[in-house]
Image (cartoon, rainbow, N blue to C red; front, side, top):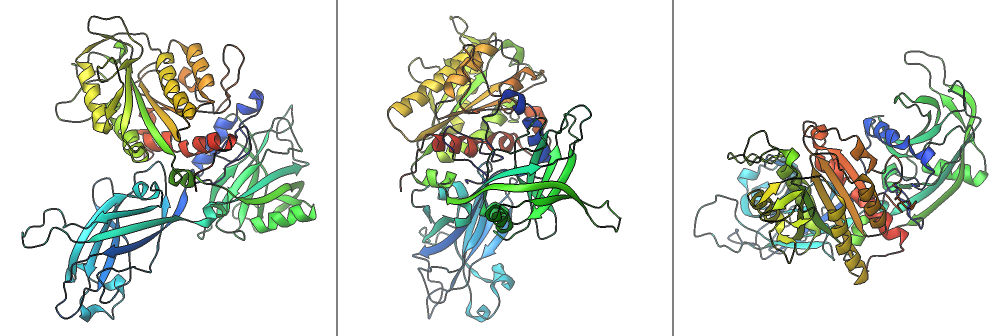
Length: 579
């Protein structure tokens, strides 16, 4: 999962593959470039996984010989329906098959990828038929198992053994309960680990601004088989520069497709309105970029011919140079997980009075008798169901803030479980139960202060560092309003930026969250009241209403950046996974 990432000490931006340590004046446009990149189809980081299957102690369903097993893999959708992903070959006369067929699956951290495995005994009369053509209802069912992809890849040996059971609802007590086992082994593609570092430079760029030079940035896209260009990387924006030299970008071979796959490198002039001017483009593979570097020569940019016109592309005086080209094998996000690192989930919930009376349907804290979750419950469920697989004990610290416990003063960090001694609850359902219980045991108050809960989370993270535990912490803050301790919160975030901690903030309700976006350091690095600048970006903010009705869920919006923030932390501190 180390695609387009930096390993330079001190920490650099992993998403987009460019350094995040830029002057504040240069940093301001980069959030807009991120949005531009996403609008053109950028999907974030991913890893290609090769899945192998084997089984043991299968039932013998044949009279004169052993079973002839075949496995079928399904992906389970959100609605519970199954979509067939692939089939193994049929192995003859085997109750402990080791199938040769491998399955390539794209692992995405921010999505819970449910897998279902069915094993069949294929009847002798069908042995000469392609497995894709077999009608499964005509074969004898041997058992099923299910898991998530993250459950496999988080194992130290990336291997998971599951018991095979009957399909849900199957009847018949004569069928033995023990139906054998299936073992799943996941291996990350080598191309995910091979990273290319590029330092790119342009000369003689055209001026598109009336009273100043252009503000150039690059977008690198791969060309798919259908001819569509999909962006995979970007540089930062450089102000007033016709001969820009950008900070390093990092591409995995997997992102590019192969070293010989065509890449389109486009140079744009940044405009605040989002309508960026194309200054020119080139099409080169990684191999061709390596040749440019070796020869020390540049390649002329060109402007594509207008759609529908037959005249050739216009070759420009502007040139692209490759000042650095190097390849190395990097430890990826999955390497660290397999090497013993865990992601520990924490949550803090806003109990201020602006949420409304929890007993009234228009309250953001209203518990619907029909079971329909409110926005707070949705955020906990969607983030928690992803992160729970990366936490071995599934004991989660949970706090509330902005409420007055019974017979007490307003608290800006109280244990959600009601205990005065410990803050942890058991599992995601434990968080939800503690949240509902707290609604009946506290009085909503105010103001909205983040500082105390950030300090509590940072204290837990610092204890892990002191005891040398291989943990990275993720704090989810769910709030309905603008905070009133902005500078204190910034100070807490700057201090926490040196710790193994990321903070995800979900804004619920209809408040104006413009000030909250200050905390999301995509625009400029946070600076404390003493002048100290955050060592890295640890905060992601998203208004829940922006994503709940679209295809991109709040989980994907928030969690897509986490592997990058994790890698920035461990690489900048020269921390390595255990072999």
